Amino acid sequence: MAHRIAAIPGDGIGNEVVPAGLTVMAAAARRFGFDLSWESFDYGADRYLRDGTTLPDADLAHLSEHFDCILLGAVGDPRVPGMEHARDIVLGTRTRLDLYVNLRPIKLIHESLCPLKGKGPRDVDFVVFRENTEGMYAGAGGFLAKGTPGEVAIQESINTRRGVERIVRAAFLWARAHDLGRVCMSDKHNALRYEGDLWYRTFREVARDFPEIEARHLYVDVLTMEMVRAPEQFRVVVTNNLFGDIVTDLGAQIQGGIGLAASANVNPETRRAMFEPVHGSAPDIAGTGRANPLATVLTVAMMLEHLGEGRAAREVEAAVSAAIAEGATTPDLGGSLTTDGVARWLCQWLERPETLR
Ligand code: NAD
Ligand code: IPM
Ligand code: MN
Image (cartoon, rainbow, N blue to C red; front, side):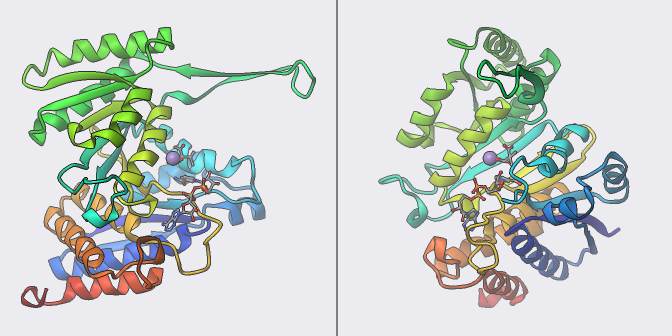
């Protein structure tokens, strides 16, 4: 049966990296003999400015019913400074499809890409489980006396026992399934009394169900420090929505830059999923051919794994490693290829007979 992908390139470089990612995915499909079909949807700033459409419930229901998963590029456009469209397209898809796991691997592919002195691929290899539906992103809050000198803005962090427990459990299950031996939960319970208390208590309780896995806690400020000082100590990190957003951009840098950071938004029970590179729409380089497509290609590898095409996923990752080793990259990684040039290089590598690689 064909895998059906709903592609939402979105804004800026999303329109460059998503086609590149799909081209590589098509090459992988030819090589491994699976059927693939995709349809592109124009949700994004242009559409929003044209007719006010963001990503309505009925459209999302259509995507979710008729496609196996969504591949999103990025959204964000200087003409929509309030990000009104993005709220429905990115955050709204995560919550409406209840994609509570935001899985973000921090994996250094080649030593030359790491800004940390003396660290290599063996030292930077862990995953972050970012809670994806609650916390500071829940949208709870409001203004008092808006527009007056006495204005008050309240942003509330929503944390439910169910929400915290399921992301913590997902992190432990991942550690068990991949034989990783340890999970580190990161919060800020010394300052955030209520949410911190719930997170810490829940973590301790869930950890009891996984006696073979070392359960460790770090305050999030310390986590950022330790990720730079000694990243090799981490295997699985679980944290809330906002902290997860921040620490995965830090993680992106220690793995070689934002142009290499991939992510999956998944609900492990329903298997619904949306895949997206961690980076944004990069308006500063959009249209120049300088966008690094590797984050999207590695995201496609995560999507292939989800679709049951594990061999193809690993081969796509191998192609990315080869491109980096050969310097077949965009300028952010020191190469001189364009976005499409990198995609073509990867396709050729994937389609070449094994003996020539
Ligand atoms: P950004 O990730 O778009 O860009 C940050 C810097 O990294 C820029 O200098 C950019 O040129 C560079 N960069 C990013 N991706 C790159 C790539 N693939 N190759 C080479 N260089 C790359 O972050 P920003 O500038 O803070 O945000 C721009 C817009 O994107 C904003 O509207 C923001 O809200 C949005 N955004 C969207 C998402 C998403 O859709 N998931 C994620 C992050 C930011
Ligand atoms: C990300 C992005 C989004 C987030 C923005 C665009 C709302 O930064 O996916 O990391 O904060 O989750
Ligand atoms: Mn982010």
